[in-house]
Image (cartoon, rainbow, N blue to C red; front, side, top):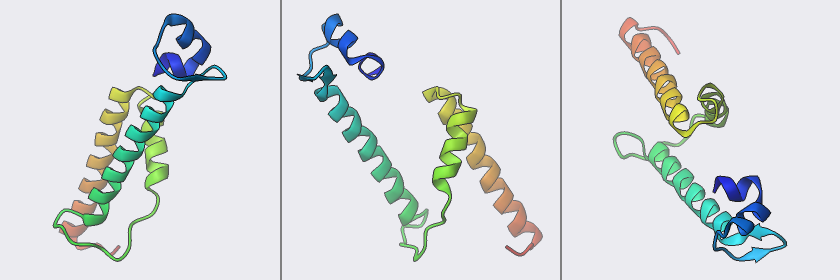
Length: 106
């Protein structure tokens, strides 16, 4: 995927088997789009259903901006993004837990 994303013509020259249209490797591009869309859909289903399996009437906004921050902190490295996402999630959950334990208003 990195080779195709960086230079489709180089991918074709390197012998990556794919449908080529105007220098684009369509099979790799479609596969990447389908996998990333499926993972995004799975993540949003998990978010909407929540921890106890009930549908909530509203979804908290701002997750896209938090994802941008996590990608920036992880330096666009997949492993770094996972680690930075876990760090941000731990800080968020612990902040809410402290708020509940101390009885602070929202």
